[in-house]
Structure formats: structure tokens, C-alpha cells
Amino acid sequence: MTFWRTTGGTDINSALAYCEKQIEIPTKTHLVLITNLYEGGDANSMLARAAAIKQSGVNLIVLLALSDSGNPTYESKHAGAIASLGCPVFACTPDQFPSMMASALSGKDLRSWAAEEDIALVRDLEGERLLASSSNARLSLLSGTSGLEGEGLP
Figure 1 (spheres, helix red, strand yellow):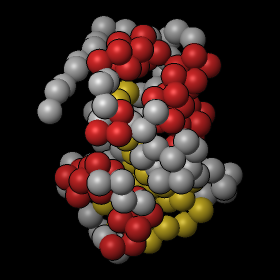
Figure 2 (cartoon, helix red, strand yellow; figure 1 turned 180 degrees about the vertical axis):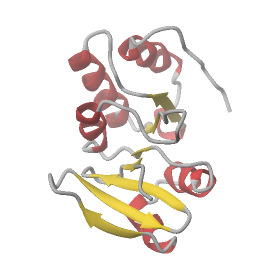
Figure 3 (spheres, one colour; figure 1 turned 135 degrees about the vertical axis):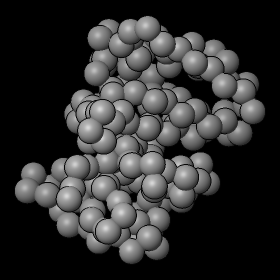
């Protein structure tokens, strides 16, 4: 297993370009992008690169940032666009993280994961995501195929 870490700015497209060059066997690669998806560079290029990486066979997983108070903080338009590619896109509190990440790494649909964890799903007013609530989780599903994101629910 190889890890790459890029930091120091918000040029996510450049970080993805660097990672893309390191990939030797796309179908055996998991790329976990830890970000708030606020792109300081070219957002369209970032989204196109994410799509190309996913289409190459890489399991692209986006772990969204949490604020100091534990609520997700991210660019929702970009998160939705990447989730629509079939990529797991989520933020979650630490109690649910190991199980959720294991599901994302194995390619499991995160809606199925939520059902197994007995997390009830309810569509929000904009229809963009599904809110989830349980006694021990703060989550919501993006409208994409398998994306999940954190939400500050009571």
C-alpha cells in the first residue's frame, strides 16, 4: 500500500494530477481524497480529472472535511458532481468512520451500509441529498450513486 500526501493550498486538480501519475494499476488502486472540495484552481478541470480517474478503474473515495464542531464543511456542487460519477463521497463522525470507510473501500453501496446500520434516510427539501439519523450517527447521502456525507443532525 502506498500513500501520497499533498497539502498547502486548494489546488485539488494539481493534487489529483500528481496522484494520477503515480497510479500503475488503476483497477487495483484506491485513491482517498481528503478535502473540503473548495477548488482554488480550475474547478472544471478538477471534476474532469476526477471523472477520468474514476473511468480508468480507480476506486476514488472522497472524505469530506469536518469543522471543529464536527459538522461537514465542503463545496456541495463539487461533492454532488463527484458522487454522480459513482464515487463514495462522505463525511462522518469518528464513531461511524471505520465501518463506512471499509464499505467504501470494498465498493459496497453506502445506502446499503446505512440500512444495515439502521440509519433512517429522509430526502431533504431540495431533493439533493438524503438526511440520515440514528442515535450514534450524523450522516446524509448525496444524490449520487453511492455518496454519503456528514450532516450536523441532533
